[in-house]
Each structure stands twice: as structure tokens, then as C-alpha cells.
Image 1: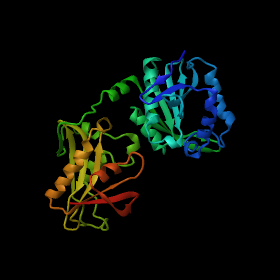
Image 2: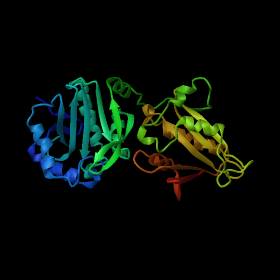
Image 3: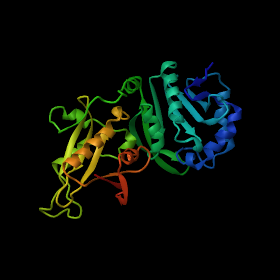
Image 4: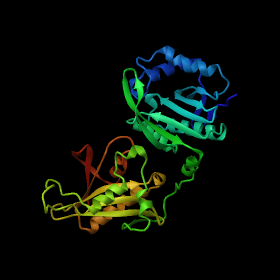
Length: 348
């Protein structure tokens, strides 16, 4: 018999007949169904099937799906659903979830997934949990990444939705990865320093990385260091022999003496007397420790030391964007959009 799971805010219990209408309404919502592989229009009969299957069993089967309803602790408000897909005689499991649109952005999916992950590893003792999603579903990717899942690969032309075929991304979590995620440092660092790139241990620095969903927002460290070796030309004069190149200022971010990220400025020149924050990358295991904010303040101080009157930055908008950080640090959008990025500036 399955015992419902409780979190700080949520109750996860087996789906029952009274959940069918809410499940149908949720999964027929194009804001949700556009990211899924079920045919549209979504039918009520399709909503009934997983609920009735769950009701026919006392606990998740070792081979097959089983649906939990995500509700408030009083079981009076339904927020969404979470499905486990157990395989290999109960030794591995897939997971899937949907939250009604009016409850997006409140962390219910991450909180629910964390509870199901704990049950699958600690009670069922599975060896692996995985999830599959549309490559552009960044919101769902952030849910998985928040719970420690890592990107494993992208399969091409692997997901058929009626008459169209799409790519699919696979995220996975093992007991070892879960331990690494749960034991990561979460407290603020005592010291944060910007250190010149060094040859010894550079491979370790290059291997620092963001979450997969954030890769569209910042280049890998190896690419940034390559640009240091071969600096790009100033805007508007590329491709001419002898044209001035940008002057780049790269630094490794150390927290308590350990490399945790990378930052790179464009130094002021006669052609452009304002500094520009080109790159800021904090490793996925060291995010949410306040390190990024301290690095931004350090580069602002550096721009002041260069006697700059302002410093610029740009960011890709969307889920996982650093926009809130930069706005909180006093950067104001200029109204310019450069290659899809919002350009902002802080007067010093």
C-alpha cells in the first residue's frame, strides 16, 4: 500500500476519479500540451485512462506508469500531477509532471519532484531516474536541474507528435549524482576573489559549467579563453588587417580558494571608454551562494579603478536568465537589443 507523500506545502497522493476533470482541463491547456507528446485535441477519455489505472492498484507497479495528484496539504486544491514510469522490474524509473498554469512559478513542480525522487531512491531503491522533454522547454529543464538531474543527451527525430517529429532531451539522476547534489556547498563563501588565468589546473577550470538550460546564455569557459588568445575585432571594423581588437580582461572566480566560475570584461579603450561585462559563469554546484552578486560588484569596482564612467552588460531574457541579478545591481536596460540580448548599462 502506497503511503501519500507530504512536503512542506504539498500532498502527493494516488490519483482518484474526482481528479479527472482537473487533469483534463490541465492537459488540454495549450500552454501545457504544446510541450507534450500527446495528440490534440486532448480527450476526456485520455485523462480517465491513467487515473483509472492508478485506482486499480494499491501501489506503483514494477513495470508501468502510476499517477500522483499534487494537492495542498488539506487536499482541497489540486495543483498538478506527477507520474512515475517504473521499468526493469522496478529498478529504474522515468518521471513526468504537469502543473496548472495558474500555479506556475511557485516551485510546486520542484518540490513534488524532490519528494518523488527521495521515494524512488530510498524506498524503491532504483538505480536511475530519468526524464525526457522538448529541447526548448526551459521551464521544465529548470525543474529537473533544481532537483539535481543532469543533461545526458539529445536524441534527434525521436519523438513523433501526430505527423511531425521532434528532438528529445534526456536528463538523468543516479544515487551518486544525487549525493553530489545534496552535499554541494550552499552557504555563502568567506572569500570571493578574481584570479588571473593560470596554466596549472586549467583543465579543472575549463570543466566548470552551468546547467544545460543556461548554456544558451553564456559561452563555455574554453570558448572565452580562446577569445582571449584571439580577441575579436571592435564593432564595425572586423575583417580588415590591422583593425583594433577588443582588450579582454579574463579572471577565474575563486570562492574560499577554489575555482567556482569565470568572468571576463572588455577593458575600456580610446574607441570605447566604457567597460563591458562580457561573460559571467558560476558552476552549477555553486549557484545560489551569492557568489555571482559579489563577482558583479568586484567588476564594477574594477571599472571604477579604470576610471570608467559606466559599465555595460547584456543578457538573454527568459527562464534562468541573470536579468534579476543585473537589475538588482543597478544596471538599466538601454532599449537596445543586440543579437537577441538585452543591453543594459550602469552609470558609475
